[in-house]
Every structure is written in C-alpha cells, then in structure tokens.
Image (cartoon, rainbow over all chains, first blue to last red; front, top):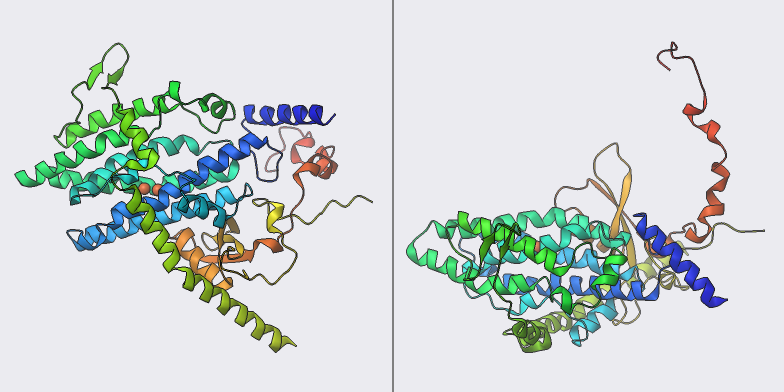
Length: 318
Length: 122
Ligand SMILES: [Fe+2]
Ligand SMILES: [Fe+2]
C-alpha cells in the first residue's frame, strides 16, 4: 500500500517535471531528488564563497582605484551569490550551520578551480573571462532548473555575472594592448587558467553516472560535455580579439562537426585537485575556517544584543 | 470540520523552521540566527515582492543585510522583513480542493458574456 502510494507520487512528480511545472519546497519530492539538489546547491554555494579568496588576494594591490572598486564589487557579488544559494538549499531542510560544517570538515566539495593561485594581476582578468565565463555557461540553463528556489536564485545570479566576465575581459584587453611585459603576463595567465576552466564543467559524460537522472528531473538541462564544447567554441573566437592564444595545440575548427576540436583533458590533475592535492586546497580551507572562527564573537555579540533589546522591549510593555 | 489554513511556513521553507518557542533568538552560537523573509518594493506604486531570505539576529540587522544582499543595484526603495516563522501559508497538498470553488464560476470572467460585435468600448 505504502509502496504503491510512493510510486503514484513519483509518477505525479515526474509528470509535473515533464510539463515544466516547477517544484516548490512544500511539494512532495523523491528523497533522491532532494539529496541531489542539496548536494549540488550547497556545493555551488561553497564555490561562490571560497571563490572570493583568490580574487580577494588582489584587492589591496589592484593597479588603480577604478580596478579596486570593481574588484570589491565583484567579490561582494560572489558573497551575495553564496547567500542566495545557501538560502535555496535551506528550503530543502538542511540548516546553514550544517552546510558550513560540511564545508569546513571537508565533507562537502567546492569547485576545484579555486584551488589554483592568483600569481599576477592578469590572473584577475583571466578569472573574470574564463572562470566566470565557464560559470555563466553552467548557470544560464540552471535558470530553468526544475526546483523553484534554485531557479530563482540563478536568475538573480546570472543578471550579476555578466559584469564579472566583461570586467575580466577588459583587464586582459588592456594588458594585451600594453607593453611586451604586459602582453606576456596576459598570455601567461591565459595559459595557466585555460585548462582548469575547461575542467570546471566536471567529468566527461561517460564518467558522470548521475547525469541521466539529473536530466530526467530537469535539474540539469545540458550534459557536462555539451556545455564544455560551447565554452571552447566561444573562447576560441574571443581569444582572437586579445591577439593571444589558448594553450592547446590540438585546438582546431572542425567544419564537419561545426565545433572546435580540442586536446585531451588531464583528468588525473582534476581528480588530484578535487581530492585535496591542488596547489591551494589547504590554504583556502584554512582561510575559510579562520574567518568563521574569528567571526564567532561577532555572531555571539549580535545575538546577545538582540536578546537584550527584546528583554527591554518586554519590560517596557509590562 | 476541515481546517484549510494550517500553520505553514512561508512557501519557501519547511516545517523544521516553525519552532515552537518564540524567543527568536539563537540561544547558542552553533545555531543559526533566525531566518527572515525579505520583500522589496522596486519603485513607488508597486507592491513589495518576495525576493528571498536571510539570517539575522534582529529586524534591524535583517533590513541592513537585505539592503546589501538584495538591493546592490538599485533594485529597491523600500524593504520589508518578517521573521519566517510568523508567516502562515496554505498547504499545497490541499490545493486542489482549496481552490476548486473558483473552478465552476466562469461567469466571473468578462469573456463569459456574449455580446454583439457592434458594441464598442466595453
Ligand atoms: Fe558568482
Ligand atoms: Fe562571478
């Protein structure tokens, strides 16, 4: 009886998905759908938060006041993105504190791209162009994801992201028209950020066993490889405007496919970085934990102040 | 008697949030600050619209944080915050029966009335 009931609920659920009716927090949903979303949305939130660290590294050293103001605004946006996404995940029944714990204990992952260092100012340009570019490629289809709060968060995020990518490209464009040293710095940053950005789309389709289910539930709208190909096609053209090149000798327009062919991805590096052995994994997590612990007294003080105000108000009423 | 309006959290949140005690203050630091729903009026003459939620220790902090999070690009000129546990909502499981009184009242719509085409400005 109970089993039949669940099967019936699942049928109604899939029916709604197929009809493009969004799922809202109080609606019945399969446990696996809920778990998949919690994992994906919280991972996404953690990425926005940890993603502030490599760029924050350059706020004090940005080359002009304009660049500094822009970078601060971008980093602040990323904090906001983290918050929208944490809120969306919370609607699925996981608490903020639990998610933060999962990040700090290493149980939850974040995008491996943020475990690479930002060595020069050109890296800030490359991050905006390539890393935010790849993120946008991933995020635009998520504006139509089947879970309402997630989709709404993504709409807000996508609106804000386009400035991120444009400011990054502008940084590179300026460098690409500068001195020889600046040109070299620009190319060097592209060389270092290209492959990690290509990896941002996640493992290839054959290596992602959950993709089919996520597509059926319309959590995902495109596979990792489809999005990766789109990204390569666009960047291969954009890099020409910079008069730079992408560090891939196999990159070549394929007339028959109507796409760029590109070289093999170093998946070993990808799994190494995910597994905690990237150049900055320890540093990033330590910085996150330190910020959280150093902020404990602020959180406590705010709670104590609110409690005191409430007491005062009660006393005044009585 | 069937009660249609059960205590529900605002549509965006689960029952877990509807805590019994109403102090609204996170007693220990391991717990999150209370959750607030944020409503923003984008310009004069428009309704406040739900835009999302955030955690804050009190209403003032909730409004200030809402400004920083939800109106960084002049999206609003007025903000309402309300602690999420104070919001009651209809139950989606009852939606079919709850809204069906309206289903058979097509005469509430102007298109129900067939009038000659010559009749203008109506
Ligand atoms: Fe972001
Ligand atoms: Fe961004």
